[in-house]
Image 1 (cartoon, rainbow, N blue to C red):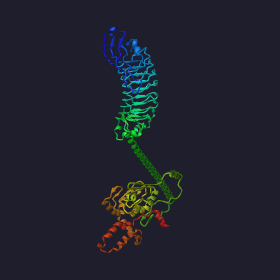
Image 2 (image 1 turned 90 degrees about the vertical axis):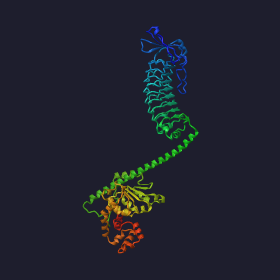
Image 3 (image 1 turned 30 degrees about the vertical axis):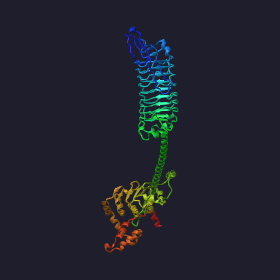
Image 4 (image 1 turned 60 degrees about the vertical axis):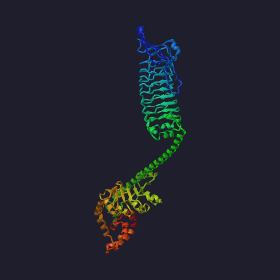
Length: 609
């Protein structure tokens, strides 16, 4: 029985089974005038229609000795189309055996159902093999085709690039529309000019070293998030990255180092939706001629250049700020280390003195109602370990002065010298918060008069690692002009371990009418409780002192107030006018409380001398 059908291949194909009678021969009459090798390759010298008018008969004969059909062509066909053969759209599931065709150069198996590449190892002169749109799962059977220049395996089921070791002459490799997840095993293809990996499952691009002749790389429609090694391709001109997952230029920054790249596409990526996208690409890739298939104008280049300069200025400023920030961090760390060494040294000396004088009474630390700081004199050499540590830190600043907005931060005792600077009126007037860190409180006390003068608007004081160890030290703050807020960090200030320390501060500094302590609002009940707890202390302190001693410890303004109070005894309350009331409010500090003062150890030693 004969059966004929028209298919678009341009060949007369006869499939004959040798064990069947002549009547069982199946014959397909094909259209001779249709091209079966469409020109899909960009700028390639092998693009030509090689399958048209290939003769009248091609026989595929099945043999009982083999499971593969055997190709047979007439002598006329071999003469007319000696170097090419097309078996397009023949519903083939396997590659037929092709004998006596060793001179073939172009072979086309497009649009079939072939699952494996085989039976072509004898075609060693083959330069183009087209297996587009089949069901191939693995690249194989090509090791003998050393002359192959074009390999088209698009739209198959290939999961891995492999078995291309002997195809060192490849010029075009098309693997689009497969299931490839990684670029690999192609570094030896030094003559490859076109590589198509579009519509695969790639998540990143790398491992491209060795492709020294590659001019076109198509990576459209993948899942790519970053690109590497493209700058190592010396001849690459066209790179297509459309419709991937690239979201920042940093993930493709290697492109900026490519000197040959002239055409690139990013459309369909998240990065292409950003307002800075075009300018960023152009300012980093000045050699580009086309972006997203559109020619770049001179105006666009000029705008990109202007923005590039601004961006460079921002980077320099950012770098400068980073350096300053790092220097600040290192300096603060250095100050902290020196502070720790100093505290350790103090503790060691105190321990040694306790051992020596364990049987003898210690000198009292009380004078005129004050308690002295127990900070010892710096006597005796450092042990070798501490000395080496200090020498190692000497290359870094030992103090830091920082003005940030309305806050003046002082780190290390050397920072106190900054109060002697000629501060501008604008800067000094702007400071409302002063922070002390890694500085002995007794040293801070010595500069409080300067602080009052230099920064008249300072309302908030912060203390961290300042050795506030006793309530009496708060007495020293009374000499300031005004304090609205006080912050005592528990770190390095043991005084906060006293349950009633806040009430003592509110009592002793009541003339400031403080608003917050350690960030907590001060209430009227807090003021009442402070007066109840410590009011008797001030009364006892003042009543035990003779009048001349009391006057001697008051400041000039408070001396006048005290004398005025003495002179006004016995007078009617209405005699005191409003001006005196204002003066009293400005002077502020209660006379009884003024007897609760604080004397640093250094000052006490000077008085003894």
